[in-house]
Image (cartoon, rainbow, N blue to C red; front, side, top):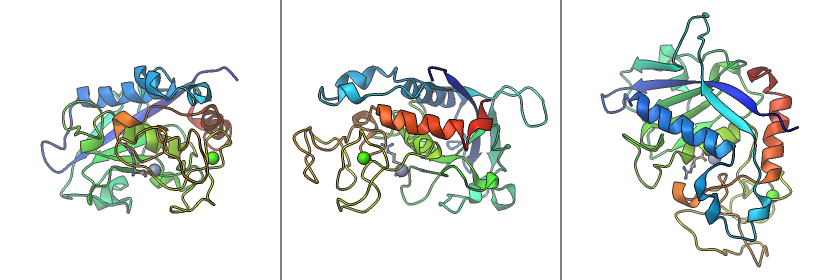
Length: 254
Ligand code: ARG
Ligand code: ZN
Ligand code: CA
């Protein structure tokens, strides 16, 4: 279907220091990247190697700050919480007021995004569709969020959220999550089979698992490269996310 899907988002800023309490401009910069990437309107698409260019897809998904909160009151789609917790891990504590974070807004109506300091250099993590409502959504490190303020190279182009929202909409890592073997699959047909994650800024082509001549699609958002080295979803990935929005996540927008 050629319909644009619009998803309301709430950004929960959970801060232990003034620096972690990122400003509204930085949040806006991130939501702009998110919608631009999910409309394949990002200018750096022109850097996709030409053999892969025909595979680019437009998910046709737009994200907008929630304008009504769960109580029916007007909101700018941002919550701010001061926490005694110096850094969070992947145990979902940031998603609970009782653990130093803030509770999710109803996950059937909002995409919940928590921004906080994550320990061990973690950029972010996401919950796939089908999980508990209380923990549904994505978490992003405040140093890898947006393009201004505390955003820090090489993760200062807002692509951590693009990657995490890919998971939230049911995309697996492009290498199939089987370590560096060639037996894994991302369940998407138009992404090449590739051995393991790529990092940094790889040079095209990078051949693994006999996927020559064009090799790994390391410039896909679901690989692990630097923000400036990732810039595409495929049509197959777009279709998989749209299928999720027609099923498990339909209540978000319809
Ligand atoms: N490592 C994280 C994950 O698997 C995020 C990777 C994001 N990469 C980036 N270039 N921002 O969810
Ligand atoms: Zn991931
Ligand atoms: Ca594949």
